[in-house]
Every structure is written in structure tokens, then in C-alpha cells.
Image (cartoon, rainbow, N blue to C red):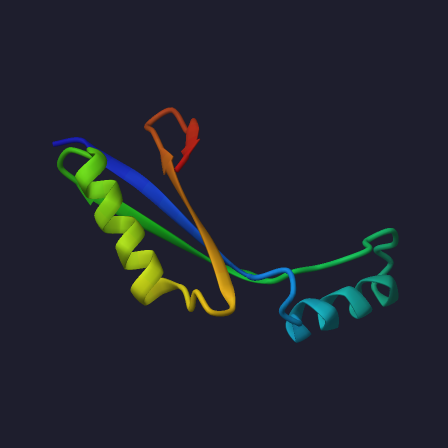
Length: 91
């Protein structure tokens, strides 16, 4: 049975302060990495889905992301499907 990979990326909304990202940004020049003007830290979830990856399954994954994986008050999320060849499609 084919297995599809769905990636859910969760990031703080642009207007929300990101102290972890700011700490990384401040550390980079001290480590010799110049020219980085902003850093935002997020979360990545890789879901392997057995069975058909139809619109109903994607809708269910979006619901999961909205209610469990992301705090939509302060975070945005994207859902991407990766096929066997590594190509990506955003939804």
C-alpha cells in the first residue's frame, strides 16, 4: 500500500515576537555568520499517511493542524504533500 508524506510547518505569526529566533539571530555574528537580518523558529511535523491521500484525508489533516499541532491564535501553518519523488505540493 502506498504511503504519502504530509508535512505540516508551524510558525509564529509575523506580528508575534520570537525570542528563540532573536537569540539565534544575535548569536550568528559571534559565530562568524554575517548578513542574516531575521530568524524565525518554527515546528515541522512529518506525517506518513497510509491509504489514499484524497481531499477528505487532507481536510482531516488540516483540521488536526488547526486544532492540535498549531495554536492558531499566535501561529500559522502550512500543509504540504510530498510524493515519492520528493516533489512538493502546498495546500
